[in-house]
Amino acid sequence: MKTRQIAQAFDVSPSWLRRVAQRRRELNEISPRPMGGKRFEKIDRVRLAQLVAQRPDATLAICAADFNCSGDLAVQDIFDFLAAWFANSLTADFNGPGVISVQDIFDHLAAYFAGCN
Image 1 (tube, rainbow, N blue to C red):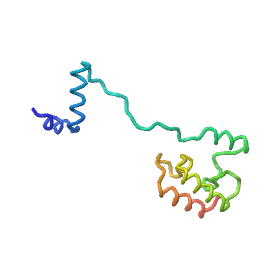
Image 2 (image 1 turned 90 degrees about the horizontal axis):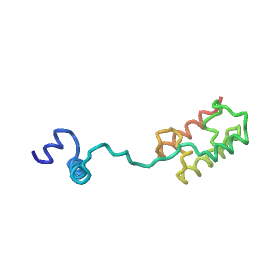
Image 3 (image 1 turned 135 degrees about the vertical axis):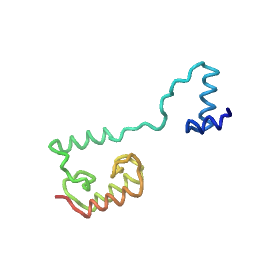
Image 4 (image 1 turned 90 degrees about the vertical axis):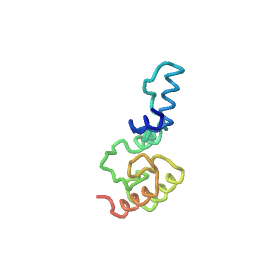
């Protein structure tokens, strides 16, 4: 069978199949390789330590729209969020899928205008 036919039968790309065959030929093994991709921590530990030091009594009930954790909702929260967003900081990932996008801006503004209870 040709590479393309085998790839179609197993629903994989022909290039992946060629790499596996090459690895088998050269190293005599076909075990799965570790997954790649960018590894990152969503939590900025330094920033978290600063916030905890500022407000050790803080809880998770604090309003998400209060971006700078000042304890009150102000226009400065929008500016601070946008600064983090333009800096491509993971703290600006407001909706949580691990990707910073324009949707994060809309979600933060929606939370801001909804207010905090």
